[in-house]
Image (cartoon, rainbow, N blue to C red; front, side, top):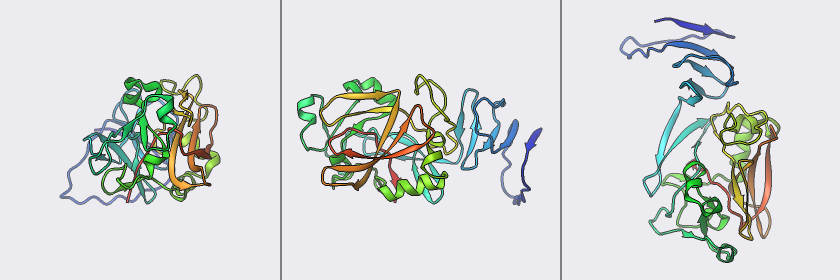
Length: 260
């Protein structure tokens, strides 16, 4: 076995003799976040936030877990700082007590102040990649949108995440999936160094119209901002920063869950 080390500091590694040895081909790269960096399959990098492995076409989080929703859909998770959260958008059609969440397809029904979900443009094919869009009424429904032991992050918890990544001004690029497969036609500053893997799932406005697929991603918080709005996080194709927005509660946004 041959391992190439690119190091900027000294590591003290204690390995118990009884522990199995993990063998890997390639290199351990430290503080490398650009996907253009040459790497062999099996190479490992430390981005400054998470360990990732090169799978031949992209870097994949190594320090990840999983959680399943009521429908049995399983999501990858990752721990950033003291928070563990999903790295995929929620897709459930049921509350945690088993009751259905209303699927509102028409503009007319979407405008009702009732907990609802939809696919972008009402196309199930969009849900495979981007998950479902939920209005804020579903986010705070007492029946529970997230799996047992998980919750929708409040505004303060989103701030903890973006502060961990250096603040809003630099967090966006670290939270966006890299490349132009999903983000189009540009994806400014994207490194996904955090492993958050943010996708541009777009939104459904409170009047029922759709916009932004491929251009921006919106995620709800559970915190109200005024009598008709709640706080959210936005990632945009032409910004390195993440933005905090006050959004109408009837809007349809993506959802991520945090472990309690």
